[in-house]
Image 1 (cartoon, helix red, strand yellow):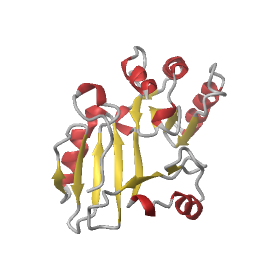
Image 2 (tube, one colour):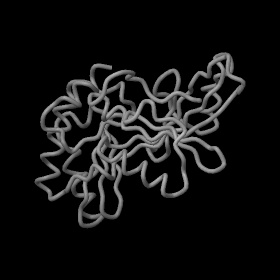
Image 3 (tube, one colour):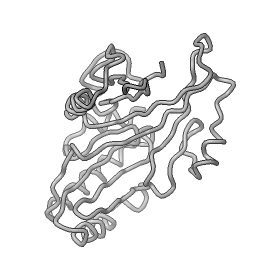
Image 4 (cartoon, helix red, strand yellow):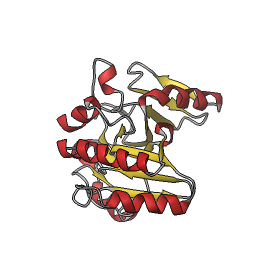
Length: 225
């Protein structure tokens, strides 16, 4: 896991947010044609072809993801990120860290009931690691399997993880509370807050791993309650 820590501490990667899925950047442009032109330029950056980069175009934005999992960030991704940022600035793209996020479904069960193969099959997802899966098109949320404490009464549970830039986590929290949510647990804040809606469905707003180096204590992600 040293790769994402090195990325966070590197110079020249200010455009990038380190999410659960790895480093990502969003560039605002004037049109989908400009987004396509920028994507074409980025595709020629040295190292992009071998880095499993995912480019997503919309009408006025190009999103770039260097990996599909934070654990896959390696030293060469820092150079790739710097080069992409240079190309984006040259082409008039404006980095917007507030637009960068990742939504992930956490499927929790007791250790003997974890069924990652079922979830990959029913979603049509590819394998990233032993405990997760990802949309091969890069459009849908990833999922990961989380072990429940055998002593807990629940046999299974789900929650949503929302990974955002460290400086935007508090604003996302405030918006959720204003929309009727409530804080269930904030002991690990600002790494993450556990919230629920009025029906009790839970979601974690996480600045981890992007803000991991700004706090002390536990460096792992949210745990199911």
